[in-house]
Image 1 (cartoon, rainbow, N blue to C red):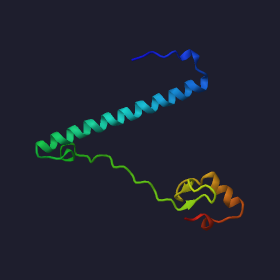
Image 2: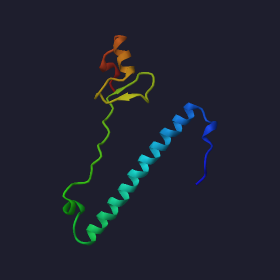
Image 3: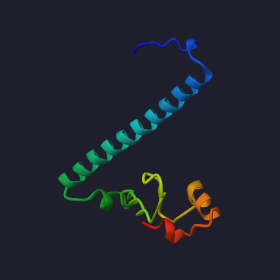
Image 4: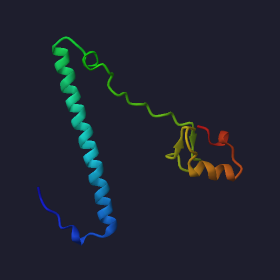
Length: 105
């Protein structure tokens, strides 16, 4: 491992580095947990069981992303599924007199 001279960085750069390190740690931990889960599931299958039968709980299921229902009229990369808080661009369009049906995909 190499040492880095952090004294030459600005506060903004250091805060950015901190966020990057925290994200790397979180994803590393997630990968390690998934690898351990895969190993345990394989061992359970060798013994003729499922991991759920042994542990008694199902593995965490991931939610599927909501389908976008609304799109920004000028920037098609900006979408909203119509759930949760309205994005700023939706609020601005409504304030300009547009309706949600005008933004519908």
